[in-house]
Image 1 (spheres, rainbow, N blue to C red):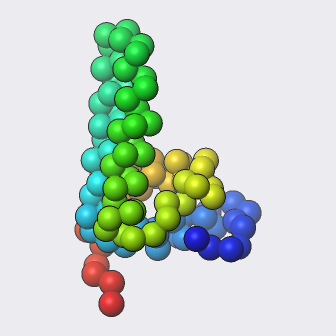
Image 2: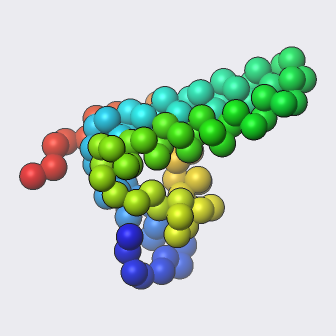
Length: 108
């Protein structure tokens, strides 16, 4: 984890992207965030409020598997919880819009 502190989301997001260079990690983030939105839609449509507990388990579960087993780094959530969450959503929508690749180039 980086020792420096970030003063803005604009400064943080490039760091976040460097922590998500593994293709499988990025795909797991994308799947987890997509499922998060699907669960939220289901909860709101059916008013099945107990389903809200599935959101953090699904979102963080997929992401943390990606970090611990594929990226082999500590999730930024532990040090920057809000900016990391916002970055998860930004990455998800950037991938959907074609602004970020689902599978970034391989690291050397």
